[in-house]
Amino acid sequence: MRRLVTVHWLLITCLLVACVAPVTPPEKFSLITHPDGRLYVGDQVSFEVMMPSGFKPEGHEVQVSLGDKELGRAGFGPYGVAGRTEATLWWAWDTRDLQPGPETLTFTLLPDGLTWQETVTLQPQSGVPPPEPGAHWAVLTSDCCILNYITGTAAERDIASLAQVADEEAADLSARMDESLSEKIPLVFMPRVLGNGGFAGNAIYVSYLDNDYLGNATAQVLHHEFVHWFDTLAGGDLRPTIFQEGLAVYLSGGHFKPEPLIPRAAALLELHWYIPLRTLADEFYPQQHEIGYLEAAALVGYMVEAYGWKAFDAFYRDIHATPDGRDSQAIDTALQAHFGITFTELEGSYLELLKGQTAPADVRDDLRSSVQFYDTVCRYQQALDPSAYFMTAWLPDYMMMIQRGIVADFLRHPGGMDNRLIEAMLVNADHSLRAGEYDQAERTLKGVNVLLDVLRAYPNNGMQTSVCPALRTKVRVPEGFRIGAYSRKIKTFRRVCQPAGSSYFAVVMVASGYHYGQIPPPIKGAMIFVSQLKYGLHHNCR
Ligand SMILES: [Zn+2]
Image (cartoon, rainbow, N blue to C red; front, side, top):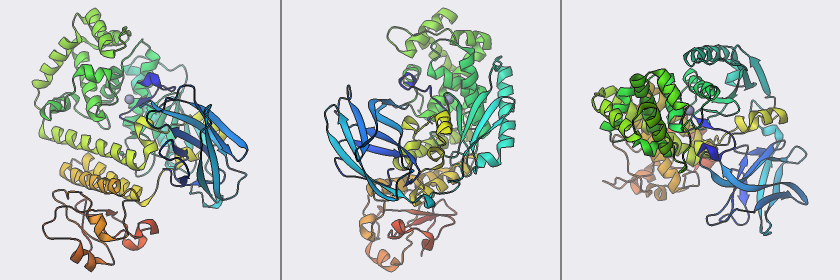
């Protein structure tokens, strides 16, 4: 799958068009503009044009124009880990000489000549959110690395300690993998969450921000990505994804935190989540990523234990593509050559090891909650921050950004009330998970999923201007939750919309720290909120 993308993406795990009003024909081609969220005068705007189903993209290009001026054109090709077919026009529209207000862009499909228009509203430059407009790229060089960051961000504040962490993690891996650096590693600190917080390509890109809903596990993330870097330096041929990612988690002693890999993998069997190794080898990234990464890491651990590091390393770097193009077949061939066993036999003995283990209850609970957490994160990203979703993440090249003086693509992300509410809840869930409070974490995650159900049922922010239609949303109230309403029309709500014994309600949450008066106008019309306070959810209106 990674061969489909131009950049060699290795994601740690799995890794809006607020101001665009399509004129014609929205059902045919869809558009995402970047930077995310509102566009401001001065932005350098990129376009992702997605094709409708059934469209054959071969030989077609999309041309974008403003009036008589062509802004750019691009052919269709696979984008991202998902290989989504789209035309991508990077930074095609320089808006610095324009005035605030609506602009009409014309999209033309070449050579057919089909055209449609999109109206984009540019906000005044004075409204650009901080740390813009003053933010710019800066650099610090440490023993191991060239650290690139944007001024005015958490990374700038903490850059000295980040350099120290990077040096420690790189030195550790250099020794363990017996590889030395001939050149320093380029590191890029991104002030927004993309994917699951890190990936390696022409540099190591790591999310670094306060209140990161994936948890501030910078050392663990850096270590994981450094494994990929040293792994690439060490060479080899095919290096199947199952072993690349397995190695990264194994050598990091866990995925997002230190974890007992073999007992944790044994819990997969108890939870009936085990993925057959051939499936995992051939389709790694589409699997539930927490499960896939864990299973791969425990497999590497098992093989290192059984055969020794040197023999494993020699095997891993001597795997070659087979005519059918399947990693599982390539692994099978190399296993027979190096260890005289088939992939099926390896899986048999691996499973025997796992079956012989007893997974402690806390390990099993942690795994179950972790899987729920990352599933919920993926669901949130797909619904409300699609550019962050790892399969189609917006991952600009940092060197191009530096050359062009662009910071907005990393600084801005959807920041609507829905995003803030859910991200605040995910931060709480992450804290609970890391504190071993699994029931609490799962309660909060249920709340997030209920909110996402509501938002899916009511795409217009999930909000209705009257109470009852929202309440008819078919959302089952999770066990342990109570419906709360926060409304100036609370009496009406209780009388009309909460029939006795009904188990279906729409619920929306107010994050702790907010109250109704602070809720911005687009959401003010919403009549029902359930706030997450003590219980993850809390009714504060009765
Ligand atoms: Zn990885």
